Image (tube, rainbow, N blue to C red; front, top):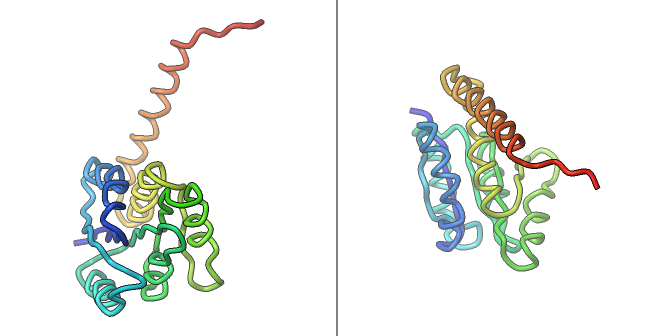
Length: 164
């Protein structure tokens, strides 16, 4: 069974990642959600990554807060795609964004936007990766795009345009 492994450093990040898990559930994509650390419990985190790969994890999503390097630690321990989600912490999340996006060559971390929008985007990016091997999921994602485009058209029709 293929699934997405979601790893958060802090319990408070679990709440911010609910939009990610809700999005994956909506599309019927399996996931595991664990608390892990790049600074504390390194062996446990490394063991989980290897265990998750053996069980079928195809994509990892890892949060980062402040100068946390969970996503980079995960990327250093797998060749599977890793998506980093910067959390809105100190400095409005810019510290987390910069520590996640600025990876050295050879150990990439795909980085999405800060906070809840990033949580949703991490789910969509993970599903796009999985859809490379799953035509059914690709069809669901295409249908979602069509529905979103129709919603924008409907919403736009309800907005009055004024020239002043």
